[in-house]
Image (cartoon, rainbow over all chains, first blue to last red; front, side, top):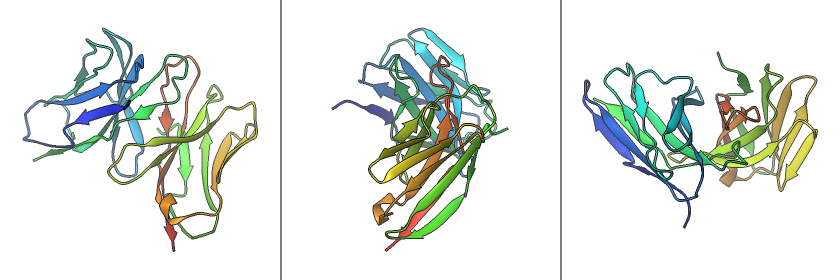
Length: 113
Length: 113
C-alpha cells in the first residue's frame, strides 16, 4: 500500500525544546516537502528537497531544519528558535516529472505547552 | 504576501446546489493550477488541476474554469453532496520550480442535507 506516513499524529512540546517530526514515503518519489498549516492561512512551504542530500529553504524556514539522507525519509526538526511552533505540519512528495501533483501525509499536530 | 487570493472564506450550500470558489493570481509565470480537498484532521488530496492552455476542465461533478487574461480560475462543484463538505485550496506553481506550490487561504464548504 503506497503512501506517505507521518508520525506522531499529535506531539506536545515544552518551550525551549527541539522536536523532530517524521515523514516517510514508499512512492519512490524524488521530491519531498514540508508545509505548515495555520487556520485561515492555507499551507506555507517550510523546506523542500529534490534529491538525496540536497534541500532548499521555502518561504518560512526560520526556526526549522531538515535532512534528506535517504530517498524515503525527510524528517523536520522544529527548533527552540521557532517563535510560534504550534501548528499542523504536513509532509508531501511528488515524482520528478509531475512535481506539481503532490501527495500529502496525514499530518502532525504540534502543540507547545 | 499571498500570491494566490482565494474567496470566499466559507460557504454554505444546499444538497444538489452548486458551490463556486474563486482564485486570482498576479504572477503570469504560473502555469499549473491544482485544487486540493482537505477533510478535518487529514492531509489535502489533489482533486483536479488545469494548465493555462485550456479554459475549462471537467472531472465528474468538479469543473475548473480558467480565465488567463483576467488571471483568475474557479472551481465549480455541481450537484453538491454532504460528502463534499471539506476545505478546498487552490494553488499555483511554475514548471521547473520543482512543485513549489503557492496556496490560497482555503474555502470551507458546508453542504446541508
